[in-house]
Image 1 (cartoon, rainbow, N blue to C red):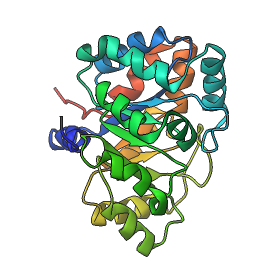
Image 2 (tube, rainbow, N blue to C red):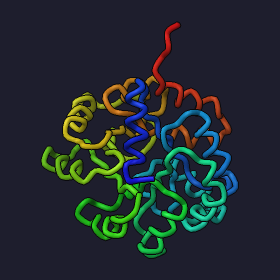
Image 3 (cartoon, rainbow, N blue to C red):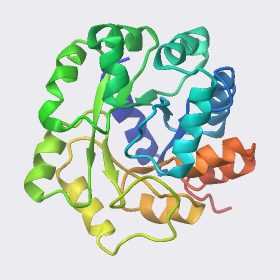
Length: 262
């Protein structure tokens, strides 16, 4: 595995005419024992990569659905260390890249050096740390420099052209294009500027661009994904897993695949 594993997986989707599809799931929602079952289900459904949320007590970027899932996982005693340990038990069965989405506090509590070592042992392909701004990312990037782990950057709708240039220049794996001004959660619609924003990002980014936040229906997967290299779907996946509605998960993934006309 190299730092390009995420980038290469996404580009392979695009080259065959599909959109990349990255589901977000809350690790340990329902207990740590659900982790293997849910990851292998998503892999079988045909996802490009999987974003694993680490439960945290103060998730500033998360909407109600993901906050509640995190609270359930915390109540089950799920921690960052336990998730990484559990992954190692079945990691050889997982063929798609795994990305951790977590806040900086649990990383600092574990210790950056130990955290990176544990991520390497669990074959983590990428990290998303939403409360770690580009200007402060050196404290983690320095430790990741000699690893295969990509540090994924987020770009907001309000980012200036100058800011976008700086963030995309530091891009690894993919650029996470936030599609709304606000927290995660289901949205019925998106602003008129989103298409232009995604096209601007794709024009300057050296790595693929994935759109995320608020995408919750097959129609939105198709329509928004058409202007990016793919999509990230979170709250709708988390809610479907909580309700054991696997058909909804499969329908969302299927929407990212090109239609085959017979």
